[in-house]
Image (tube, rainbow, N blue to C red; front, side):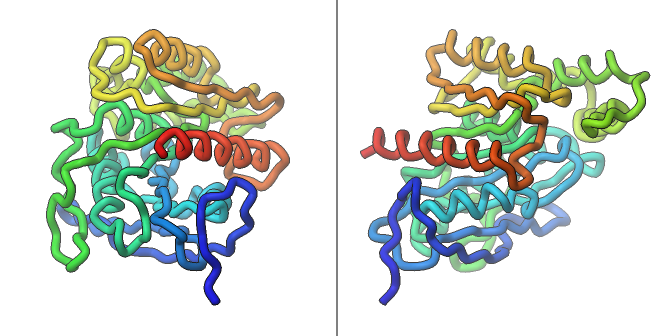
Length: 304
């Protein structure tokens, strides 16, 4: 008899993985890796769209496997996206693809066994910026246009709703312009033992953003501060103490702006942790995943 699946922060469900095409922008087919708890859901499950990091220029849908599997094991469907990146594509191409990913999950809610009202988003580093931007600007015209694969295999816009119920962001580059200016200030430094390489990050900013104006346009902190946010869903942010990729001031500015605008945002410090730590098994990763499950559980209870 198949196990009846429901969200449970302490659950150790087995997880199935499969790659599916979810969108076809011009000249590309984008894949998503779907992590789904094995068994029959007791009721439609909540879903998380996962947006990987890599400075908008590298990595793919498999990069978030550690947290993707762990969150799915608690009774969630996690859909990790590929998306167009620099230098071959410029902002807002990735944002259009992320919006398409949210629409895809809603279009395929029956097949995936998910509740279309409970679709949320998680992102890491530059993917955290993309996830947060999607959260605060649902329905943005500049993020429309990527056709999704519909349940019958045809292409189309799919559901109009690309909003998210809540957002989790791991060490997000919430303000690309502020981060660009930070790495410029360190451009003459050699590569650091921590993995920080100013030149690589500068090149990545140039690769995805046409100019500083585009970086400012993509700044979640600016969008929220300027009153341009269309939504302020509940948010949870992980901030590593030793993050020399995204300085604490960038995260602090996001937290302050979100709260000033009336949004509810939680921030957890991880003493001694570095940027990207959730990508590898560790005690801090276990702590982060437990806290993410706790936050998700609280939001799902509020929606009942």
